[in-house]
Structures are given as structure tokens and as C-alpha cells.
Amino acid sequence: MTISSLWHLEGNKNGQAALQMLQQQQLDIAANVILWPVSLATLPIRLSVENDLSNMAPESHFSSVVEGGVLLSALRRLQETQQDFKFTVKEDPDFGLLLESVNGVAGNQHEQTYWEILSESSGGYSRLDVGIGCYKPKPNEHIILRFSTWHKQ
Ligand code: B12
Image (tube, rainbow, N blue to C red):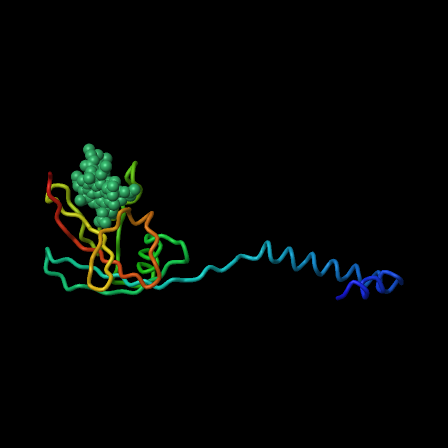
């Protein structure tokens, strides 16, 4: 719609009605843009579960997070869709959510065991520097939940 055709519409009664309709349509479009929920991209991730301490066969799963979503959401999504994947968390007053157990195996203060969370890339492993409630996985990241021991220093 050019300025000259708008001017032409303003000049007569039918034109004014058409102009009002046009303005209403533009308002509707603007309202939809503002109110419509934006669907965020879904990022696939791979999740492995390893427990060498009790000779369990390693498991490999696929899950996803929305863009900017945290690892906890990928674990929840997996738990909802896979019968053989279960986890529990414990809330820490300082650092948020601790991954307490995976598939019924829980970290134990007395035995000094815990679920360590790693990221694997080209065969190299790095420990996540925050917990599952804060960590934002990257697309196609390979996360490993490994049952491990810790030692008092
Ligand atoms: C010792 C220690 C551990 C030990 C705790 C052993 C024990 N039961 O005593 C172990 C090895 C289990 C551990 C694990 C992890 N830890 Co740690 N840990 C520490 C450390 C060095 C000291 C904590 C402590 O003893 N405080 C003194 C006691 C008296 O206070 P407390 O409140 O009772 O301490 C408890 C909490 O700190 C809790 N805890 C320990 N680590 C973590 C991590 C998370 C995410 C949560 C929710 C709770 C938690 O366990 C302690 C004992 O119950 C701190 C560093 C620090 N500055 O605090 C890091 C620290 C808390 N850990 C950290 C991290 C990242 C982890 C892991 C996620 C690492 C990983 N990638 O696997 C895992 C947790 C994984 C999971 N299952 O969710 C980060 C947390 C950062 C953040 N903002 O989230 C810290 C701050 C180290 C850092 N990067 O600077 N940890």
C-alpha cells in the first residue's frame, strides 16, 4: 500500500472504511506477534549413564533441551519417555539441585560415592562446573553421569 493510494482511500467514504479495516488488521497482526507464544528451538543431547563401581552395563540415551534450557529438563524429559531411566535430586541451600540417584543407585556420604557429571568431546572429558539445575547443554553435547568416589582432602 503506497502513500498515494492511502491518500486516495482517505478521500471517500468507502475508502475511509477500507482504511479503518486495514488499520484494524495491522493492530490484530501486531497483537498476535506480541501474544503468540514463541516456540524455542529444541537442541538434541546425548546422555550416558556409567557405573563401574557396581559393574553395570553403560547406558546411552538421547534427550533434548529447549534453547537456553538446563540439563535438569533433559533428565526430566528422558524420565517421562524412558521406563528404564529414573533419577532423584536433593536441594542444597547454596548450590541448588544435587543429582542424588540414578536408576535407584544413590550417592552415599558414608561410602563417599556420588554421581559425577561430565561432558565428553572428541574422547576428552571435562567435569561440569555447576549442577544440573544451572548447566545449559550445547547442541549435540554428550553428557555423562558417572557413579564415582570422592576422597577427603
Ligand atoms: C567437597 C565438594 C564436593 C563433594 C561433596 C562431598 C561431601 N559429601 O562432602 C562432591 C565430590 C560430592 C562434589 C560433587 C560435585 N560438585 Co562440589 N564441591 C565441593 C567443595 C570443594 C566443598 C563443599 C564442602 O564440603 N563444603 C563444606 C560443608 C560443611 O558445607 P555443606 O554445605 O554441607 O557442603 C555440601 C554442599 O557443598 C554439597 N555439594 C558439593 N558440591 C555440590 C554441587 C552442587 C551442584 C550441589 C547442589 C551441592 C554440592 O555437598 C557438600 C556436602 O554435603 C565445593 C567448593 C565450595 N567452595 O564450597 C564444591 C562445589 C560446591 N561443587 C561444585 C560442583 C560443580 C560439583 C559437581 C556438579 C561436579 C560435577 N561435575 O560432577 C558435583 C555434584 C554432582 C551432582 N551429583 O549433582 C561447585 C558448585 C558450583 C555451582 N554454582 O553450582 C563448587 C562450588 C566447586 C566449584 N566449581 O567452584 N562436590
